[in-house]
Image (cartoon, rainbow, N blue to C red):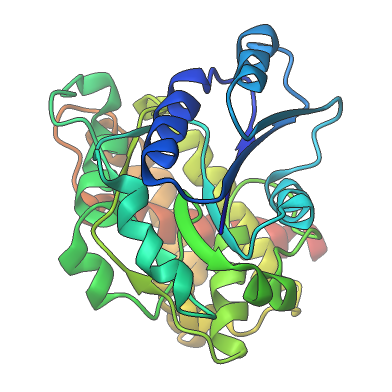
Length: 303
């Protein structure tokens, strides 16, 4: 019935697998749990212990093949018709987590996003930006349903039929941080599939501190700009609010002005975003101006 697939990089997944195995055994369903190490060099000994559990496999890849390729590899070796993908830095927060997915494993071709939750006791200001973004955007069902058709596919915790996955798959040509999930979501829509959000989250534990998250944000913005600028993914402007705003600025020849202004207000914005009370409007504006800066710098290099 169900293949639970967990790509892993330098993370201890034993508690997550124990909890999933306990629930699956209680349901009496056909299942497997496959953990694949993507070039990890930490926690290998600990993670190998899951081989002692029923229906659990631990596979070690000595080289890092990337976020897209490892998910494709896991799907290829899965033996059941429904695939439940989750990130390694997750933990189970509901006793009926797997039970809530079981009814969907009888519905043919489906894509279900279970969602993400955050520890309500976590208030460390050093992680305020990641927590604020996660709680307002990733775990807010009202926001998710409102933006369901735009840039809202998440790989953290989702169920998909193997038949759909075979026809879509993750784009392994994507390098850098971010947006393999955006392209996967678009590919689903392009083939006529819709994905449904349900209230069945896992807790996201592996949070980045404010400064690390800002660096990853910059990598993600740069990668999105590079993908769009390549000309291979013109649809991204319709599916990314950030790119849509960028295209509007470019249309009215405002990119250079925005890039110059960013130079003067960048530190002020970063002070807000790394402080105790980061503002999501400032965060969205920061990404937009940062993209303008990248674009303006690239133009100067080609002059």
